[in-house]
Length: 224
Image (cartoon, rainbow, N blue to C red; front, side, top):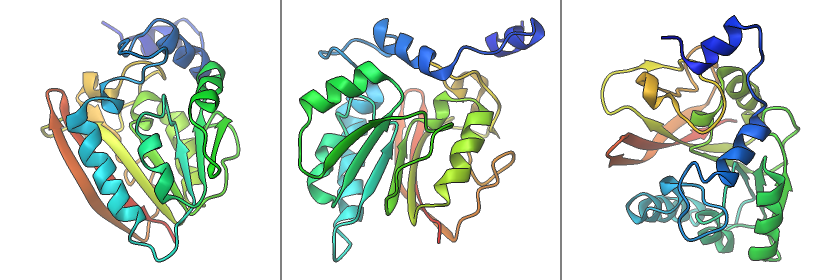
């Protein structure tokens, strides 16, 4: 049976805009309800996933003699980002859902923290030393990933976290942007492979966390 993406293409219809899809995720609690009005799923709340990630990011951020600036691309409900703000010179948190960003502005306040509502595929991205892209690309189409990857070269450091299958898989199979990921196709994102072919100076795996769905891998790329 053709998947949802193929059905839309065969009917000559465009997939649902990413903004609408992500708004529906939060309106209908498609990633779970948790204890919050906006909930970004287990990847942003499960201690066995979040705690080692935060520890790893803090180690990276505090290794600099002077604090660096960070742009968080796809900050979600900011349950993870709030743990990092104190270690950063300027923290710009970005997401596509307007209602979510208004809620974040009201709930999380710091002199070095700013929230911007942007479509990271279509819009110009804020300037910073480092970009964080945590379990975001896995939810969007190859076309949008390609647009994001083309902009990541403007940062000195890029930290990407992706949920991958726990066995051999074919990288970068296309999906329609929304709630799901490539795991259902036994696939996952690799920015260095086609069709993205992102050029980096060096890369280093920072963290690997195994869960019941696969492996959550965090990689540091040095871009220039």
